[in-house]
Image 1 (cartoon, rainbow, N blue to C red):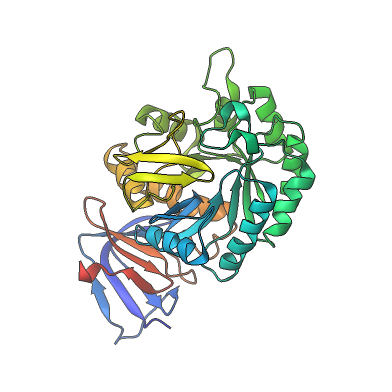
Image 2: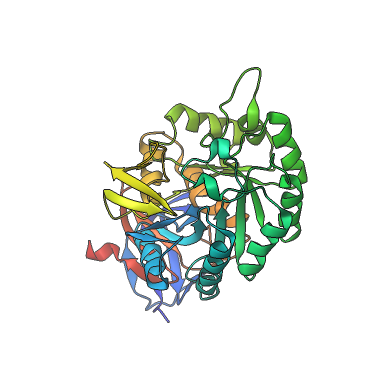
Length: 381
């Protein structure tokens, strides 16, 4: 068990607002309400102290793939993102054959049971060939509820989200199935109309997978899925804030219409996150990463990102000029609530896991703590 400690002097972002010169008390793996007189104090004056980041949508990092890597490789990818402040990560797969996805779900569910990941997100194969992005078209299939159920069962209670094109045959029944099993139904890689999207939301969908990307653009006569997803208070919208996937004006549009309590920043990261440029595989497809941008070798479609959530945080505050409290909500509280984990993570409150991030005055990452242990010690530089 980690020793008790007091983190003092930082600007602490709490659910109630920002506290200047605040302090957070850590007792073992948890945040505590009080500390003994002899508890060591770490001075974090001039820094920000925020909750650990929660990533709903992440395919890998550190040169490792959550879709195809060994247990050791998956853990390397998880650790890479922890070094960048993501203390809770959902491992996302990409389109593959059903038997392979079921086998992958078995491996990932073991890591979820151990607490290394927060669950599994199946992105594909139940998506539209019209909006496939970096998914193999020959492996796509309609969302047959029986096959959706096969993946849920393979995940042994650790399936957290399934992205699907709800306009396809079986789409609405699959949404209802997911809702019944308390798995998030996410609308994405879709060619749905506005009306079809509204129908899917009414059936139980609650998330927009990387809003704006891999879906029809907003039109004044054909408003499409974007309008339906932004206007409905039941939907949380994922946003990839890397400067490549979204124009800053699109991000501002989403925040303005959805509000800060309905946005979740994600990475949609692939193997190259925290690793570097080069050639990679995303499922069966070859990806070229150049200057931090991942694209399919064949066709040039954007193939996930190399983003880490500390960079998303810094960009949101310094480039997009969003309030720090809103950014914290999008990176921590909102995704934690979606996962049903807000009782343990997502804010700095007594009784919750001691998952936190230290940022300097320019919002660069300086420290990361997970369950009371420093992953990145701010005192060591």
